[in-house]
Length: 384
Ligand SMILES: Nc1nc2c(ncn2[C@@H]2O[C@H](COP(=O)(O)OP(=O)(O)O)[C@@H](O)[C@H]2O)c(=O)[nH]1
Ligand SMILES: [Mg+2]
Image (tube, rainbow, N blue to C red; front, side, top):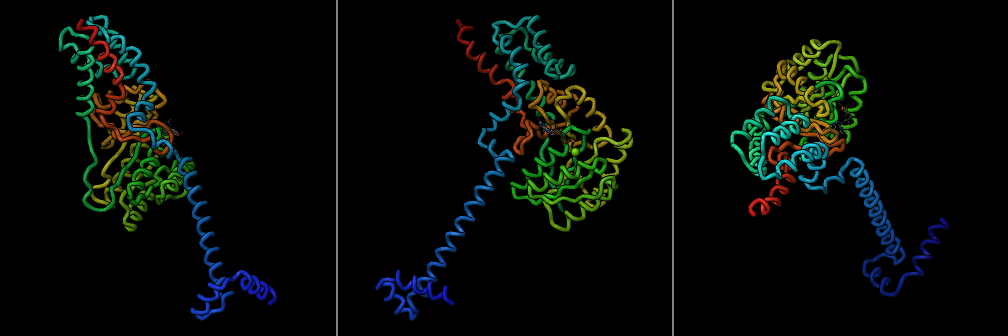
């Protein structure tokens, strides 16, 4: 044991009289006490290094998952997400609503601007009727009428989270392929998990092999559990297992992903209705919410698509995705105005934080705020 002797010699040499004193009082040899103290210091240093490394790694994972965006304010993020719609709408509206007098020709321009933003014929008519009802007016007054009518349409269709009396809240997500169902479910799962809820994701899209894998990646990111079967399996069976697992594990939220396309449209609706029945049988009152995911880029086609789903399934709200990639954001207004179902969430990007709860006032503000500011800037000119 030569190395122990060498160590003991080393500690004996670095020992000082006061250490010898303390060791003497404690009844141990100074070199033993020094060796133990060094060991403790080394362990503490090691723990510090491990903690620092884990912090750096967590920060990196967070940044990769889009956490960096959180520093952006709600209004800024919404304005960014609606960038293209704003540009299109404001480009046309700003000169119009800055006028002292809005005549018939200007109203036609307003109509075009709304139609181009995909507000839809029916809802545009309704907006124009409200604007005209006020008689001849300044651009600013027309802007105000437009704003309040928009707000009214959106709020009439508003809806909140329903109360869940017992068991986990079950959310079923439907929509055509590529609309953004799985991505939105992932973002929702992260949202609920961050709020401290226990989330179970159910891979009900058994038609596409990649769908469950994609959902599993989101589950891991959110720290949620996932229930999945082999590709090609029966969606009813996965959903049955999912609800059972969620109840057994006392989950707070269950989100069910579903297929967006089967061989025929009738097949799909039949399948989705069957999934609903299984859910309702296993947990009375569920699904508590059914969200239809629509891709904003498809604009008015999306509204037609929505009609098919709303007719067949009890849809409670719309998740409108990809608003960041389109100038057709007016479709939000068409959905509320023509279908009467609330837009509950909007997707404004692919990051975790790019799913925003929809708020009518924030939306109208983000869409029209600069018009408002510009017309106010014009008013001193008007009063001269
Ligand atoms: N830019 C943008 N892309 C999105 C948004 N939501 C989903 N996507 C993308 O749309 C594509 C299809 O989404 P996915 O969730 O697989 O659609 P699903 O077939 O309905 O499940 C993916 O590439 C997503 O990253 C969004 O809000 N903004
Ligand atoms: Mg999917």
